[in-house]
Image 1 (tube, rainbow, N blue to C red):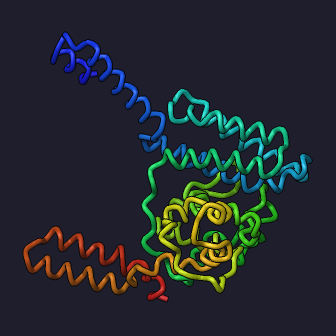
Image 2: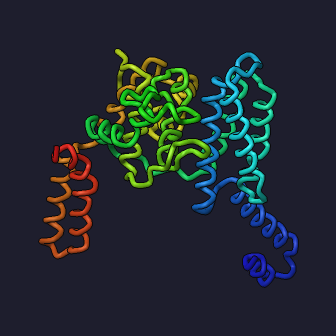
Image 3: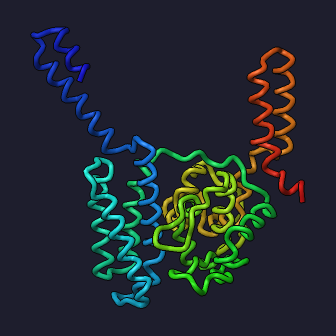
Length: 331
């Protein structure tokens, strides 16, 4: 507490001010520990808990109905996942410990077989707290083309989830729990794009879903938007989203959450945008246009003797432009 020591050196007379300043500083430090994840490991843990909370909120309806277990395997999975969430928030770490009360409430709701809406509410409250503690992810500037994304899905996902995303791939029959049916609308209405992205990035414990660490960030986002679209159909109301919703919120929250808490977008419009998210990225230039722009800027920088800047721009021309359509051009 060097700050407090310096205050004492300033004036031995101002004991009250010194004590007050020390207390304020300690409170600030404590609050920062309570409210914001500060390490890579903490963020990874929070992301995983958020992923589990959303998974439980989505799949609980397949396990319990009107206080009765309708699928014992699914219900056991809900019990295991809710216990895992409690375990992960039971550490002495300030950030985790502050979430334990909400995690315990979710676990109790599941163990007492409460209504689906109740469990979803507890899961949603926990997830909202987690999102507030996590730094925002870098968002995709644009998605891969539909053909390139489908090729990714076919090569990495179809063996379990099926070519149409119905959870009926050639390996599905031997998996427990079964692969997700992305065309199930009731389930998709409660699944966020961030949850899908995290499942692709990190896998899901105690399931056959692996972490696709070999994929680049844009490929993961493109897959998340793609599988998140399969349960919905384009709407006649398809318009560019109003300024009241940011891309960050669009990714963070499920269609059901967005439809109840977002002004300016109807339920049909939200579903239409999930089915065809191209309007979310309409302000972005085409990859080839970006390549040409960055290469032109690189050429000017080189002629001006700004070699490092020219190198940076040339790399950007590839990574932010040409690479995004390289596979399509090869085909």
